[in-house]
Amino acid sequence: MRFFKPKPSTAAQAGISYLTFKDFDVEITRKDIKRLYLRVSADGGVRISAPRSVPIDAVRGFVVSKQAWIRKQQEHLRARGRESPPEYVDGEAHYFGGEQYALSIREHHGPAKVGIRDQSIELSIRPGVPQTKRKSLIEGWYRGRMKAMIPRIIARYEGLMGVRVHEFGVKRMRTRWGTCNIRAKRIWLNLELAKWPHACLEYVVVHEMTHLIEPLHNERFHALMDEYLPDWRTHKEALRRIPAASESECGDSLDL
Image 1 (cartoon, rainbow, N blue to C red):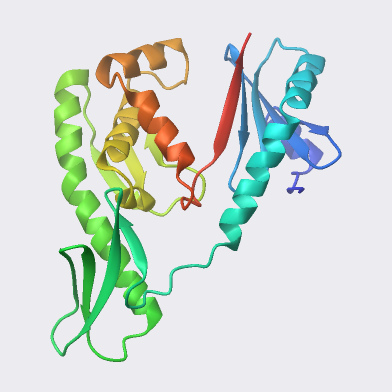
Image 2 (image 1 turned 135 degrees about the horizontal axis):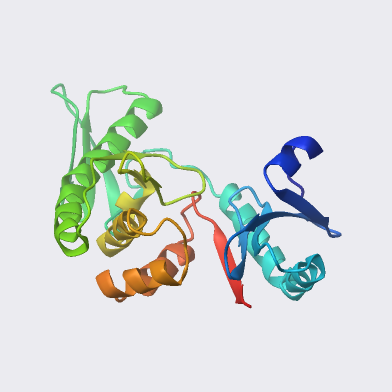
């Protein structure tokens, strides 16, 4: 599995270099960090964040020791890509808050609406509504439920952390569960989080809010996460194990 390399001049300007192995290339970005971080992104690309002082031979040795793991993650991601996309038909399995529900299509001549009834996500629509519209309605319902939950999480942790979030949003993301614009104090959350346990949503919100205090994933960041959400590692691991989350990436690291 290969992925696109930028032109050498562009890569050099960004502090990026590459190692080539039999089945994959590794993109290396040098940073002011203390660990080697390895990740396999949703597109199958292999990327490493490395301390500036670590010799390239040490980076190569780390990758060699992880080749079996890398191939396993790439196959896992390929398998996700082979999964059939939802068709939004009656009886199909969908998730909300970590629970599985059967989609119940109820045709009527009133306004379209979505809600939970018993163990079903009930979609009430006019006869003949196409799949694209059904998808849009379900995703809109997910977005609305998330936007109702997120302000309560933010308000709770703003008091604990002594920070302010000026704005938040929900959108689809290919490789991240959340992002943070530190200067604007704005956070974005992945729409897919609506499907999984609410504790996972809380973890991602707290993670992004912690970046308003500490931008880097360093020891201070981890200490702050331990203080504000002691069991955050459990939720992080839960998100990594979710088989249907195509907007995720797999990672590993090495202490130096």
